[in-house]
Image: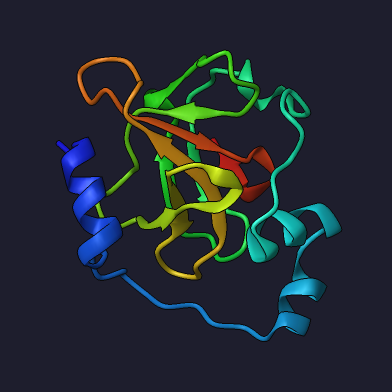
Length: 147
């Protein structure tokens, strides 16, 4: 099981190999995505907390990257963190997500990005529920759910 120590190592020593690599020009991303999805995923923005009902919907399904359809999370790992963003305890696979050290805004955090297309997803923290104790705090607009 993925641990906080694994994530810290990935964020400093290098991430797992992705299953595929998806590259597009900025113009292609802008044409493909909504304005808000482009802002969040390609410009490392953040949606307003509680701006999506995705935080409180707990139905079976899979969550994919809105940019490249990479499988990111399973709904079985979703939980209500009370933060205003959808939260998950583990990614769908260990190589679905890449991790970057983030010292922006005067904080030390670990940014999560899609490992295939490098779309900004959100951040991961070591304060989630057992057994992983991880909280993947993800912008809803960066996700696409499939039943």
